[in-house]
Image 1 (cartoon, rainbow, N blue to C red):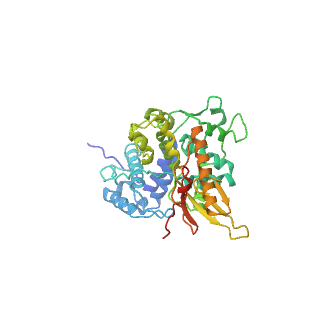
Image 2 (image 1 turned 90 degrees about the horizontal axis):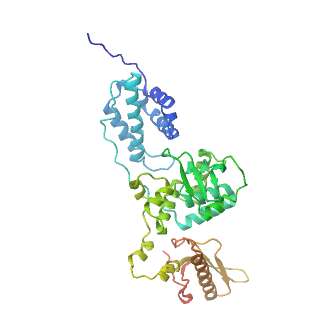
Image 3 (image 1 turned 180 degrees about the vertical axis):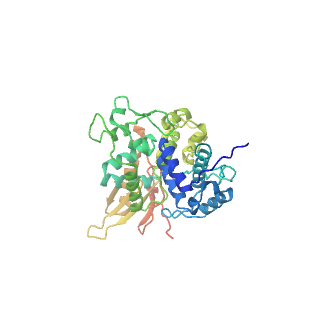
Length: 388
């Protein structure tokens, strides 16, 4: 006599709650699963009994989600987002079938998953870096330090916010991360700039370095982007930017960058190596001499020219990609010549110290005269740009 397995009726919404309480809470990404579960619970599918849900229902949910727009960003829901939601459902049904007896099968397994979206390759521009740096410095020193620390170390947001004083060795320049995303510990080397940033904070022996919660910092980050009108920049893009800069240094190999970033898979690291073309020029020219390696420093930079309408009638030139790099003179020619000399001196000092300089950004938008300043030839300082 065959035994009949009785199925316990349970709505998908209740199953998601039970899954979160018994499974998700033990994962590092439990907060993300909490948000995904809430999205699914708002869908009509959540009211159906788990054993009544079919592959057709799951496919319909997939297609509806892909057709929706994220109300916060105004952009279409990505395939990666839907894949993660389906992965959560699949894990839920697998556990519910074996351990809870609330369904006979996993309807998610046979449903086609959305294609994996192309990984983000958003790079932080020098103008954005300067504006964000100034914004944070003027409003909140802690946010200023977090922003630049991300660019210096390639640490994730969670890793930075969980930094503790007892895990920072300033003498040897190392920050120890006992618990990272991939489940292992990691030691992050701190550059001179990173150490200087941390020394701007009050000295303590123990405790959290930063007092921001994850949600509190996300709110501060969104406010900064909205205030500065910077679009499509995630804080995680700073990690991408930092790792790309490590490769662009030309002094670190893939294994060394992986040791800093914490990537276990070399394939995962490849997507971070979108090098800017102008930084590959020196490698293509094998005949280039060692003494010529500083040449990429001395390139033209965009600038704004303003004429004071007051009694003095001074002409001001502001070099856009550097903070506080501005000169003035009584004539346009003199102002341009001084700007060229100031830019040359700034770049030469950076080359001497081996410091990174911002790459020339886009020409600023505005009603003022927009030009390019050449640091090596003052006579070529003015390169007019025709306004549309």
